[in-house]
Length: 386
Image 1 (cartoon, one colour):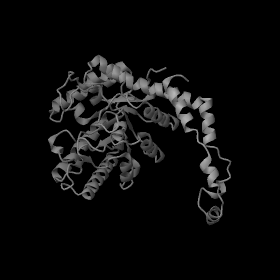
Image 2: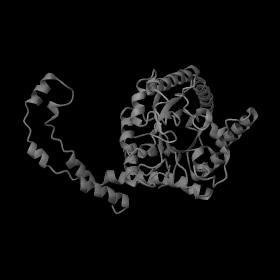
Image 3: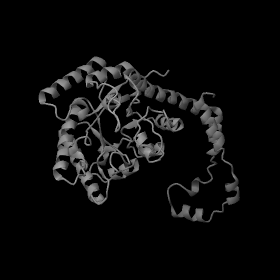
Image 4: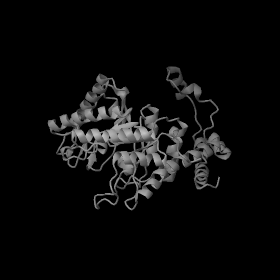
């Protein structure tokens, strides 16, 4: 029941299962694997796809001959395993060139190089079959607001997105962009810090229909926000083009834990939202195994991400079919239709009738809402006793 299939569209990045355990305070604890070796690892654990930054696949200083060999080996691994590449992205944060941002850098040469690098990376991603291209502006921010005018930064970011949208159209690529928000780390403050910021920004672009969002669990939890609500806003606006699944203790640094490893109830309601609304896109696990893991344990981590999603999907089905839960929902959402003539689309007659309507505030205030009972039943579903 909890074995992944291609229909689940579970994907991992080269940087996730390929993470060597290095952190800001410690050297690697696992040997690095080559991209084609990671593809075979993902096939072994039952994943559907692999995603990559340009330099996850081809080092930034690779020679043309080295690049050609890496790509040849990678494509052969894809062909041998059936693993696909649904998404690609550009690393605009690791190299010292981008120490003060890429698209929002104060240096026009850096901004031009960021476009140059991204266009080449888009070409490579499309060549591998990617249909979604993610932008995470990890260096697009500040430590001191004396360094940048935020309005200028917004305009520079918009100019870059417009430029790249036109590039994709000019090349005839079947590709959409997904913007990924994060509040901080590695910058003190990152521009467009939340999914809501990104959704507002998208509407200012020349081609907003080409651009959606790629929300990530950990990034919203870092700021203490309800991730499910942000995903719901993206779905309601038809802008959920991709999603990054992991887990995170609220208010901590970016931990990138195994999906559903920390906030089980939050993960449940996220899966419920995705399943109930029929989200058909890729489910990308942007996480990595503990620093203490060897590659045997990395495989357990990857299997755990997918298994947890499928377990929670089954719990959602059980929640939706539970007669006691559904009876409580019916009670909570009871509607006799008497308010329908007064609401909905505005009209002067409706407004006049509503203004003259008398309401029994005491009765409305006295009505009990069985949310405690409903939440307890949810917990019991998750604990496996219902």
